[in-house]
Image 1 (cartoon, rainbow, N blue to C red):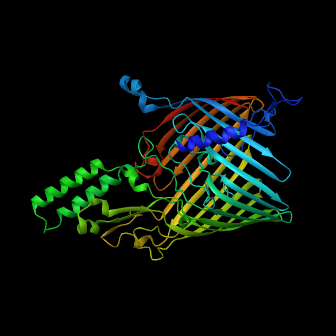
Image 2: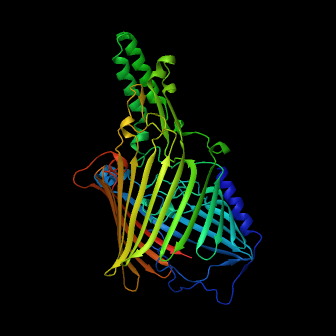
Image 3: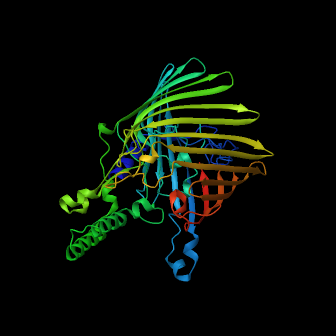
Length: 492
């Protein structure tokens, strides 16, 4: 509610002082094609009609009518009656103003199921010659990968709705930060960022998109404790029955979300980074350093603590590990292929690999390209994370390691195929993710028709397996969540 009231206040401050006026070339008709294909969305064919102006403030955005259905909701008549089709309405409002030495931007999201009005980005950018300073809620992109590369570490991601997982800009969560960039000559730039607080990746805590690591957390702990207690010869059967009953009561009453309510807004969780990019000949290079927190929570699970108090609340705590990242990236056109590569070393405090509450150090890399092949745009990227000291995980039987059971490598292949027809009004697109170790994939075909300001899009999501199927892992656990989505959008 506080965030909603704050958003209304910001909006009123923007709108109330202004007076509407139209320039001679302003029109509410249809314009030409100035769309952009930035990200994985469908930008082509967006209107070029000038945005309305409110005392120097430009206003743009879009409104959408959307129907979202899951195939398992249509298996029986009873399920159809209980099924839902999503929010139906959503929207985006963009406000921007430019002066001689500064810009200001406010981007708002309108989603009925959440707070009706939320801030996506809101920041001020000031120009001091070759130096730009930005401050506010911002989404930054570091690295050169098209899809979630290992160097793009400033903003956490929202995994609470996997129907949008292919759009990095949409999935990113804007964070309060200060960003400074210094243009050095014509081809080099030095950037610095300071993030005074921290937020991890966002996951659904319940429902069809809640990951098994959350929904299965409490049952797994209760089962582990019961198994440990049953093997203790000093515990009598009557004592075991009483302890098992108390564990069952705890399991029924505890909310897993309570464990994730850590206050990470203080300077204790501050993060900072530096990035330098340059061009040498036909090649682009980058190098960066970042100190921050890993966005995935680490679980400190110690079954032995239960025997000190016999309180199951004492065996688990959840936190976010700090780490250092050193990374490099490269981009160049090679034989007609736009090639991009990244590599990073993520260094945590667990340099021996035997800490259960801290992630092991890792090495990550990505390699990708895009090219027009016979009118079809092909974009392929492979990303892999390599876990170091994996053989040390799980050696202490009293500790359940936060990475217990994790493979040495985690490899994801992302493939995007797109083709435009009828003067770019019709776009056929297919996006696929394949998690190689998990033998699971997600395929999302899309067909979109754009006519000036209006677009119609029909898409679907299919979870499946390649050479078998694993029902766990990031994609495999959602094997029943096939979906179909239809969207009508007006851009202004």
